[in-house]
Length: 399
Image 1: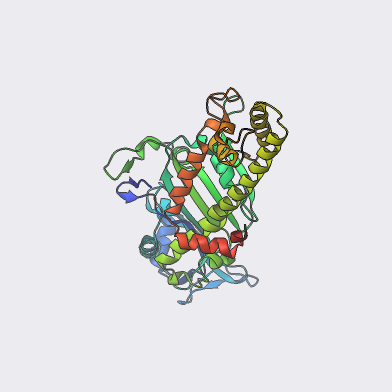
Image 2: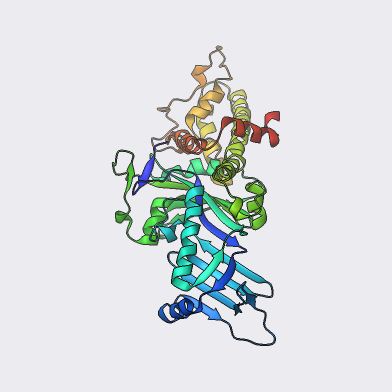
């Protein structure tokens, strides 16, 4: 993997993006500072109106409020209240730390340092003394971003394979562009109510969100500008139960360690991407072997079966919206299992200049190389041992 940087900070590392923490504690309110903030700032919604039928959030200092909402570009979004039980929730991301630019994620140390900074800002700017000691992860996003060798849109078939067999998740692809113009792939995702996996064009996302992509300079380790598209692979854990599952039973956010982030990301990559890909490769090879065998058996004399086979594979992909043959080399590896009537194997293979193939044929777009490129980038964060263990636990070693 080629290391890429933004303002000297490493981009292509596994880390934390958006975070939602529950059980944030409001311990005390410095009223002179808070009242000044209410007067000066428009990003505070506060209600302490007293009524016999209302429930209240009561701080350790005896302060009472029904609810409080603060939206701050450096802090994120903070809520306290009682409905009927008291609650404290904060939501933030690296964009809050980096002037709206969300390209470099948090590692464990950076995350804890930023929480410490949030405490200082809340105290100095709003007069709020808060504690994150007993917080729990309510939602979290883990991701990695890397530079591509080709335009993102060219990875459609590779991503279709990678996202084809994720357990318990619904697949969806999104496109940009108007109906009367050629549409381009924006993202591939798979999701349910608890979790989602997405691979999207981070370059386009930055341009749309910031409208100033030219100001965001991505460089290699030598300071050379990177102008290729960036792909971000992201996991969203949407509930506290799912967060606890993937972070090895983490109870309070204060117990979070750097290695827990790395381990959670590794397990997610294995379970939702690499293990299903191994399964797809196995099943696809079996499918191609059966299909080639039938075509050779029923071909009679000559090699016209090759054209018919390729046509059928294209049509099946269009009909079922599933990749049946990723690249021509995959087919030729399968064909090597068979001999022609003279006992030769290689004579049955299909060359790239075969008359049944057009130059722009989907089987000639180096999609196998593109899939390997994505997989190799992801494998930088996965040990071979963990992938093997994941495959065994899911029963793939039976194939």
